[in-house]
Image (tube, rainbow, N blue to C red; front, side, top):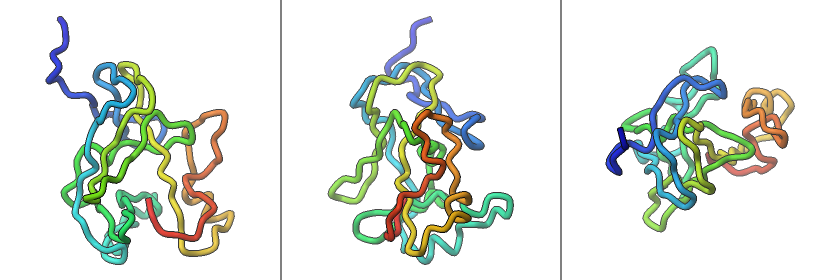
Length: 158
């Protein structure tokens, strides 16, 4: 049976990359705006207080840093965009618009069943030690994997 254009673009299921992931329910063409990253708009400090509640994975975050210093906290009012995992060789990118909304776009054609990923570009306001790098470990498995979701920067963000 042929799929309708109104069928969902993504489905959420278990991921070999990390916990749950978003997967293409149908082919997604390069340049397609896939989904908005939704959640509660708040301050970094307030969102950080909620983050890290999982003792088994204290660095797991659903916080997306915005250019004005605020964040979108997908742990409150978030949607399926929060399940898109990090990759060092992603097939999507997160684009922040002038109104501070964030949408996930395909950077290449994504096949049915392929996991959607984007580079989180995580940064910290503290020294990035080997322990911190490991705590924010990347499990994308790509040949160019840098081993961490962190960039070598000194600015907050996601």
